[in-house]
Length: 113
Image 1 (cartoon, rainbow, N blue to C red):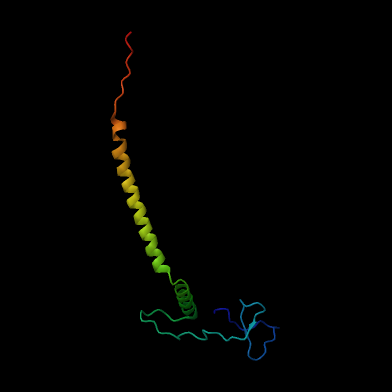
Image 2: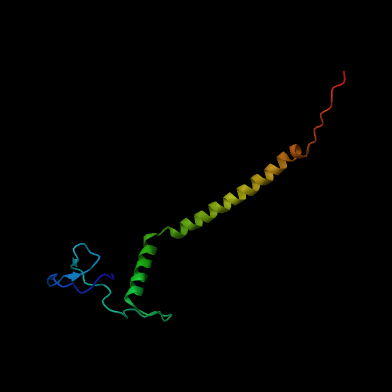
């Protein structure tokens, strides 16, 4: 989106082709989608530059490319909560079952014959 430039000296460009530094060979038939600054008005007063609009397009495509993002994060939160509850329950069980063995006193005396 931001690779459109004037072609370097010595590279012939036919009508209907545009020079893009990121495209293999440099020539592409698609014109620049972001042809000038100021195509969008932001409510918060963000300056409308080509780089800002390209960033917005990329962020939108990332958001649209992961439709299950929110559900996946919610499932992870539920799994983490279940693990924490399991750890707490196993800790209480451990203390309840082993308390008798930890507090037991064993005395060894010599056998009288």
